Image (tube, rainbow, N blue to C red):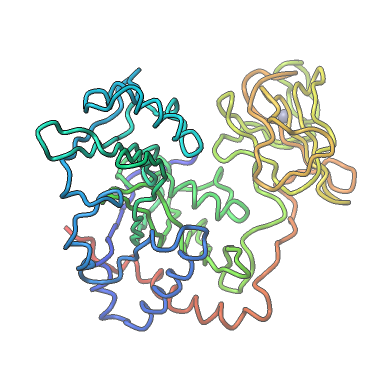
Length: 438
Ligand SMILES: [Zn+2]
């Protein structure tokens, strides 16, 4: 766990940032916005469900007819609420004069779209009722999550379908100086802690977050998803600059052949064949050494691995792509998994509370995939993962190895890459110069 305190945070939403920036460099911003739009539409989200906050005014056609959940809201009396514990669909609909046989047909009809038994307490719903004196329900809408909704349409023939709310993408800028934990401070200042996770993902190969130090600082340009004006999550990090031990690490998101990756100023991938650590967050408790006093066996012996302590159940990731060659229990290792990455490298993960489902010899795994969970099975004093690394058949200290890099930007895309990052780098560099709005 790395900690940060007293972090300065700057968050400028959409228009405010744009008006400032437009004056500084309309062309740059336009190129950036265009690229953002390209990224947004190419990341598997449905077209038309995203609107980018580039325009100054709202879409005027939307204001003429009040549309909610794709329905003409003004034609109904609308009752909203949240599902209470042990409340079922029938409990709600009966109140609005829908008969049992109708509810029964509705539930049957809904099966292929949404199983009403999975309605969760705390989630929002809306009932669209007739405006007459009886006020019978015509549509029931359930929101299984912030983005999606299910419409149970009782008008004419019963119909059940899924809809997606418009997701707005807003750009944000944050920067800070590390005092103790990035994750904690982002939480404290009301920024999404998910941002720390995203940054840790991007820099998983280049920065050892277990050795993050006071005075390290970062600047990040990212987009967040908003539904109904509420922030629901990080969309993506566009670019980031992390200064670690006085060295600048730039990361620019760039897409090639539909696959997005992060690259540095020289178009080299930030990814490496191996992650720095098999845990996202944890504490290194014992490093690779040829001689240490064993806490359980009470004698001096070599420790040919690196221990990372974390709570029982914390996911353990494979540090590289490969094939599982062992996944079982042994007296000293406890539950463990061994992965062969190629002819040169093999890694092993010990003392798991549980090996992940489907992880068995012969199974292919992708870097970052969960292969098990932290525990203290075998010879261990407390919950931790002992990470072991082999190179050409002998155990080595992975933290001292120069690990092989991943592929750089393709030759044919290099010109486009350099063109793209030039203005983005300027923006990143200028972030600290902006005044914090009061
Ligand atoms: Zn160990």
